[in-house]
Amino acid sequence: MRLTDYSLTEMAQLIRAGKVSSVEVTRACLDAIAVLQPQLNCYISIERDDALAMAKRADEERAHGRYRGPLHGVPLAHKDMFYRAGKVSTGGSKILRNQVQRHTATVLERLRDAGAVYLGSLNMSEFAANPTGHNVHYGDCRNPWNVAHITGGSSSGSAAAVGARTCYAALGSDTGGSVRVPAAMCGVCGLKPTYGRISRAHIMPRAWSIDTVGIIARTVEDCAVVAQVVAGPDPRDATTSALPVPDYSALLQESPPNIKLGVANDPALPALDADMQDALVESIRQFGDTGAEVVELRLPDFTQFAVVADAITKCEAAAIHERWMRTNFADYSVFVRSRLEAGFHIPAAQYAQALATRGRALAHFVDQVFGSVDVLLLPTLPFSVPTIAETDINVPKQVPALISKITTYTRPINYLGLPAISVPCGFSASGLPIGFQLVGRPYSESLLLQVAHAYQVVTDWHRRIPPIVNERSNVLLQ
Amino acid sequence: MENNSDELSARVVQIQAEARRLYGRTVSSERAQELLAEVVRYEQAISALDQGRGFEEEPRSFFEALVRLAAVPSARSGR
Image 1: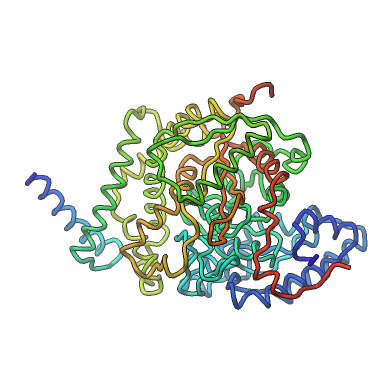
Image 2: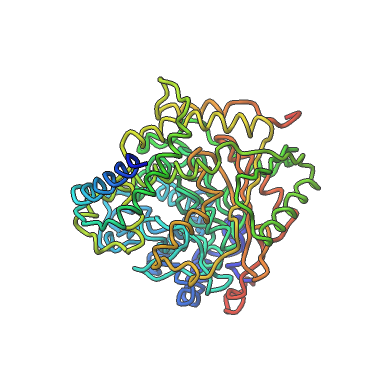
């Protein structure tokens, strides 16, 4: 078994037990990156020397009995929008290509304090504004299951890098599905927490009323480990909640709860491709076999939520980009600037109404859905992963419909601020991954992780490795 | 119908003026019509959701709802 094939949880335990050093593991990841980067283009920057220096320091600390935390010596990489003092964060854009940041994101500080090694910064959609993963400035990121296909976005590199076993987990951001969509497309797990559960201090904004930091990892257990480290209040982000963070990993060791699982039976929702439908039905059957009571229900106003979330995102993005739209118009891709434009023309009163009605919409949805079920199961995507050519963002006429279709099942959850996790549940006829998402009431991450983990105990979709990974050689654990 | 058409034409012109003023671009009539269609779709969805909103409701109510609804007992039986 290659070092890079272990899960984050397994690797953290091996390092802690002294069975393998952080330097060995970091080298294995860097070797994997060297082989796969030319084919997948997951990374915008690879920080080989700094990563090895961090790994060496982690090994020295361990030798002296100092154990930083649950990520001690584990190599991670993150979407290139989490700021680091003295370093550039491109945000996947040309405009920020040379902008050195003055502060470090709270989440990166927490990961560093827990012992994580920083391998490099990951490719992403320009300004996190595209769910396909295309990027005209740094090149398109490619799906490790088939390089002709998209990764999904905007956390394209995060999902592809984790799926390709070049790092053990990655942070991303989710404003309309940007963690869950690429996670589903690349066959990995993607946790989008409740709005306010994880700090966004010193992170490039897409739309501050909706943005969440998310976690992409190979297993639910790994998501729990990283969430434990990064979640919780932050004085630098006033929107973070003071509610205590449960011990996610410990809860996974308990017997899974008997739940009422909601599944949508709503003609207002778009139909699924046959492959997606089959995988979803099989997943529901498995939940039923393991004791869940399955309840069919309608989802009030679900499709409207997506449109209103998009309107809020457009307005806030217009405010963020107004200066550059004047001074650096040509530095945007045609696609991104065309997406930004509408936000300048939505009346301010409508924007305020879209925000003001959010609390009532959330209360109504929670009452109607989580009044009768514990967890809602939805597809992450309504169709199987398209090719890069089929989703060419340089064909502006087809783009709005495409984006709206990709995020049909994810964006409404962002409007409501609810937590969700996308979990692999099968493959399409063409061999591309399929995922479902579990959605819960506010701050129910621990329940979602428990239920998703219970599913992974009885399935092995998350253990499948893309063929491209098996074609390369790597260090074997002796 | 004619009034509606006049209003839409006026909004297309308004979008062109806003584009010049807000981000310094000249937008064609065709592009302004596309943008208007997008904006109208947003306005309709927002108005539909906003029906019945109470006078006291404001963006802060969302944060209050997140915390309040987290504390509601689960639907799980026996847990």
